[in-house]
Length: 155
Ligand SMILES: [Zn+2]
Ligand SMILES: [Zn+2]
Image (tube, rainbow, N blue to C red; front, side, top):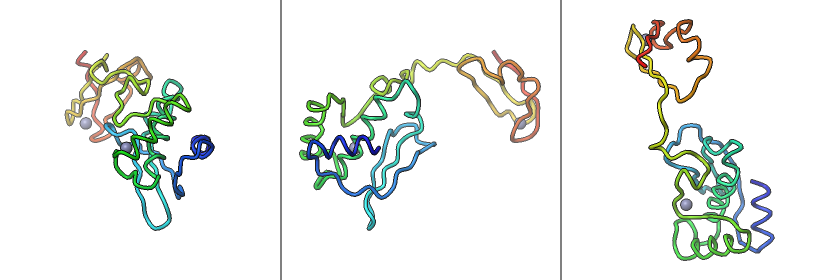
């Protein structure tokens, strides 16, 4: 965040005062969010962007949100677009109004394949896994978090 702020200030983008930054662990459909209150701007970034493969996506998202802190840039209007284009050209970024998973270095949603599916024999809670992990290797040792039941593997 600090690096991005510095880069934008260095090319004279009039970003506002950032009062707080947080990580959003729930958002599935939103990469970032910027809101304003009396202290300044608060930016939140999706946890999905915090890994090695998504470093560029993370930078793009942070810059996207930082541009919303500029005057007259609370939406994706003419000013926001103008700055986004300028930053893309000057800093070689890929800031867009809307970004796909691929843009961020993540697999496309429709390609997220389920490797194994389980259900709890007590309450029916369904658990799916995309890759082998501790759970897939030892699912018989696990108890359902909702009812304490055992898991049955469907596939
Ligand atoms: Zn935006
Ligand atoms: Zn259960």
